Each structure stands twice: as structure tokens, then as C-alpha cells.
Image (cartoon, rainbow, N blue to C red):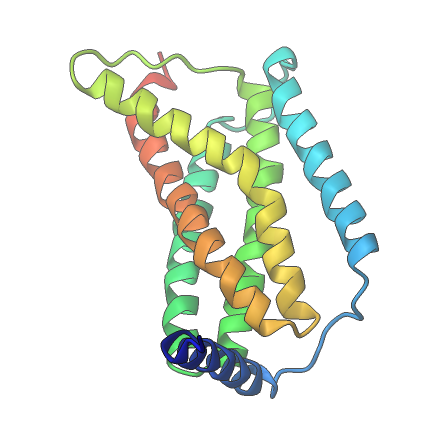
Length: 206
């Protein structure tokens, strides 16, 4: 028997995707599609970043940089806060049909995330590990926030890059589907970063 309701639903979904493609079509395509090359590049980059971050616990360089090394951590918190604001602004922009602004803000968030990564590595190399000294209810809250932040930050990078890649090659319908998952996870990582800093900051100088 012909399922009229499901057929109408499929047509609506297809029309929605066509509208999505059309509304973004004014944006120039930034890269030529090459899925195999993209998968290799994203995979290798994500693996290298993960390996470097994991190895940081074994690397500590004691050297006088001429300034407080915990300024790196403050910079990280500021960058994460700015990334969170850019993600929110980009979401508002895309829902308002301002696709070029959406693209610019998302690319800015990516660039800032690279700066954060460099600063994060430097902070861990020169400052070492800081122990959280809080007690009571704040202690389990801190470790829940920290654990979820670290886990999601570790696994989300390739998803962010694949989501961006789909947009940059003009596959906007696929980009939108991926972004529905990637955006909230990235936003959570961005807002929990400064929260971890605020809770850990009193123990940087102990």
C-alpha cells in the first residue's frame, strides 16, 4: 500500500534540503571536493594533536620566561569565552540568513581554537600540572566538569573539521546535519573551559 504520509514527509525533507542548499549557494566554494584526502589530513592532524596533548603529562620544562606562566591559562580562558560568543553569534547569523557572517565567525572560532591549542600546550609544558584543592560539594562538581570537558575536547576535533569541510566544499545540507551535533558539543567545551579555569585558579599560586 502506498504510504502517503511518509511520502509527504520525505518530500518535505527533500524540499528543506534544497532550500538549505539554495540559501547558502551565494557563498563561494572554498575547496575542491576530495573526501579521501580530507579524511587522511583530518585524521592525521587529529591524531597528532591527541598524541601531543596526552604526552604533555610527561613533559615539564623549568625555565624563567620573564612572566607568570599561568598567564597562558588566563589567555586560554579568554579565548574559550570568545569562541563561545562567536559560536552563539554564528548560530544567530545563520538563522537570520546572514550566511557570509556565519562563515566568517565560524572560521574565526577555528583560528582562535588553534591559538588556544598552542597556548594550552605551552602552559602545560612550562607550568606543569596544578592540583585542585577544593573540598566539599565543589570537588565532585569540578571533576565532573573537568572530565566531560577533557573527553569532549579530545574527541570533537575531527568532527569540527569534517563539519567545516562539508561547508567549505559546498555540501551545505550535510554540513547542517553534522552541525546539529557538532555545534552544541563544541559550545559545551568552550563554556566549560573558562569554568574549569575559575575553579582551578586559586590553586595556581599554591
